[in-house]
Image (cartoon, rainbow, N blue to C red):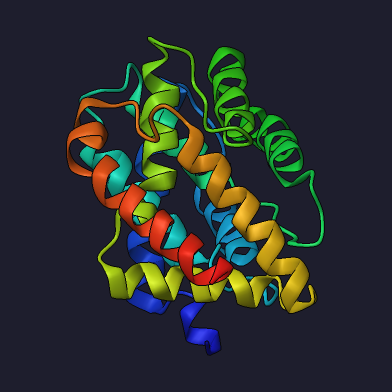
Length: 223
């Protein structure tokens, strides 16, 4: 994977800056605040860090697109979009506290950017929820974000194989046998969940394909 897979090109970066501007201004609720664009550029730089292979700007864009598709389910879609921007903003594959550090980043940056305290708290809550992807029933914001984040599991076979390969690249420092054991444990944990997707759309459109992809990958890892 070359650097262009991580860093957005000019048109993509401009599009993402526009999406950030719109959701941040909406989250402010008409309140004043500093220029949104430096915050967008800081986040985009984070998403383009060299240690990333799957958790890249492409993943951010895909999650934002899925949030747009699920927006009608969420109580506050713009808050969910902000959470999508932050959910992997801090990402080191050799560490386990990425979600917590990403939530803390949101708690620090959003008030400075003019976002009200209640919205900031909800963004941080949603980011922390991506540790388990297990929102409570009726948590429509959480359901929308978690489904958007996991939608890659329901990708067509070739795209899913590319996703799995990029996850392996991110964990290139882990020996093959240890990675296979750890990845197989993650796949089994996912397959044991009573449902992977919580929104009506996710349940109808993604659940069966995702379970097929997970089962296929698990078979390949344990053959």
